[in-house]
Image 1: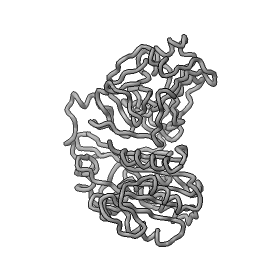
Image 2: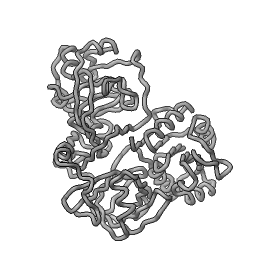
Image 3: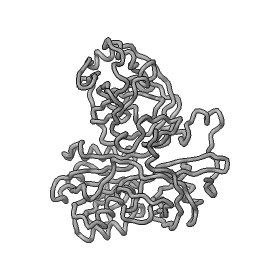
Image 4: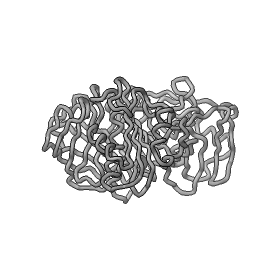
Length: 245
Length: 203
């Protein structure tokens, strides 16, 4: 084909590393060839050994498109190959190969409007965080409810930032549910996401959602998407992103 | 570019490595990926339609479709998200047998596969015929589960697995190669894993 690759490989330098939770660390990258992207998109990362062996994985972008550096929030998988490299080897100043932005379906821009229902399980919150941050930076008035399911309080990625945004009462609502701990805030839950919880989250929006985004492990997305459908949300407006087996 | 501190400790042995396309890794599980919720299609409601453009050529219900010859295919599959799974065992109806039952040969060079969820993906006719592809009904001897695309999914194992459309309800011959769902959203028009054609414009 004569068409040039839409997103060629480039090197990106790690400029900052920030531990988010015991298992999730954010890596901030300065791109050698900056690109425009949409909230929800991902990049492919490629590691190369001296003998030429390569390992590649996809990671969602956590930063808003307005951000100069790209933030990837990477969960350490004990049997993983690329995530342990980031957690145990990578340091500020390292150069990593990546290509992006990738994916054109699990994306939202403020021009798409709202209301939005965002549903994340564990590190599935990462692409949703890009949407929430984009909404804030654009001063969008689109009502957004984020249902975020996590095992325990200490594993709530972006916890302080999300609670700070929730406290602004500007149309963003955070619904936290801890599946293995009692709730820490009166408005939160302590069980898996179910239809009743979705109905209560919907009641926080002024109108039914125009779009719903669900991201997490396959088991999480299957159960959560079904809870949305059972709460009366049309399958046509539900977009999903799944990972793991 | 060599990545500082990264070693090839996970590199598979040579005979395994030769079966893994560039940029892929070997997966033992069977990950699930889809753009939306999983449709639950009952076999009593299921049908499959073969079309040429807007014109239906033939439509089968579940019983009629199951009367077609059943073929086994055991193949390695390759997902664009970088996992490869060896020796996946499928049974279903070869696209060749479906065309034969409809009494036609491929009238154009291209097809669009259609799913119950509205998903589409384009595949050249030559990649679906001559025993290369099937409409699979069974995985490892059992009906394909809804999350893996049951009751019926397309199986085009030599292309990236997004081409193997889940919840299949039809194949449509088109005059031109018309991009489908992911092909319109930045993914490669053809998708050969051995040439690493992941995204649009990859050579």
